Length: 230
Image 1 (spheres, one colour):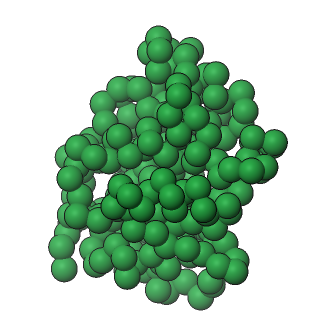
Image 2 (tube, rainbow, N blue to C red):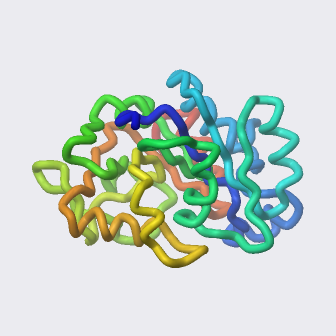
Image 3 (cartoon, rainbow, N blue to C red):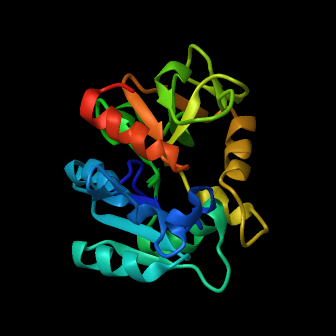
């Protein structure tokens, strides 16, 4: 089994309910930021890695994403009749992703700075890590409400608590997904297992990041792309 990621999962199945009317007739990854769909900003970061497989999970209003992604060679994992959340969706897509660790990436954020995927790949150590999450300092995270998701110690290990914001990009081993006896579940359940084993790690992002989960995040993200700050 390979120990380094050569496949990536794009999470694109969600309902986008926080976007209100903007997602009434289109899925959130197709909302435009600076004239381009959100998912294209994600794919721009993926392309330099030259991975062998890119997979997107779909559920809500999948047709625009199918038409947009299939010509670009992205494999599609359609979740029906029910949405499976991040953990269940990743497990469903494993036949398309293959064995070994994979990248996963949310499609509702904008990054300004070094490519977070390349940084993760450079820091990945499968001997001690089961997951490596890209974590953003509070001062560099825009459009995010809350006190943060994780505490990052000097060795890079993560624990729950107010501090860094999870930026929605990671490398993760998928074996333990089969130990979770639910069809729909969050990756938080898998992270908890890895944390308890001392194998959940984080990497601090040196650039800026913007959550585009709400309508006001669109203007913030566009200012970040234009000016480098908001």
